[in-house]
Amino acid sequence: MKKLILATFTVFAGFAFMNAQEIADNAIGLRLGDSDGFGAEISYQRALKDNNRLEANLGWRSGKDYDGFKLTGLYQWVWELEGNFNWYAGAGGGFGSYDFDEDDETFFFVAGDIGIEYRFDIPLLLSLDFRPELGFGDFRDDVDFDIALGIRYLF
Figure (cartoon, one colour):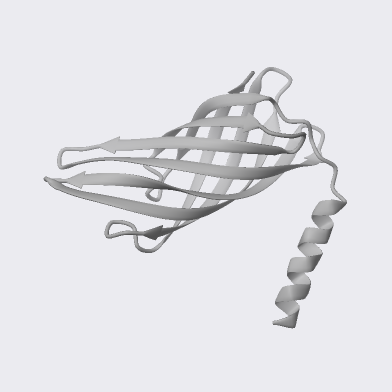
């Protein structure tokens, strides 16, 4: 337990000494992944401070026997790695609903997020992130690991 506390303290102390990267005021695009992330999600990011932002994602899926949506909200911290490369971490949650052959199920989840991103000289941002999600509900009552590629236009 002492090692866990020491490791946690070391990580957060390291955050204090990293340089913050100026981030775009707004970014909109797609987050392409899976593992109950519903494949493609519409993604919007809004800067709050120099190195903090909110991210909202809406994913939906439709098939022969089902329809569903998932809405995710995350608060993120962004740090510069080198040049236009950044890394970020965040936490949040969301909810969703699935309709299976007249059986409607709603679920809630909490999520973490960690990833890297590259900001081009043109208004384009590419990212790769890992989002573990802990679900609560009949449809999602376990842990899912969502890995996705993000492509966003900056404005």
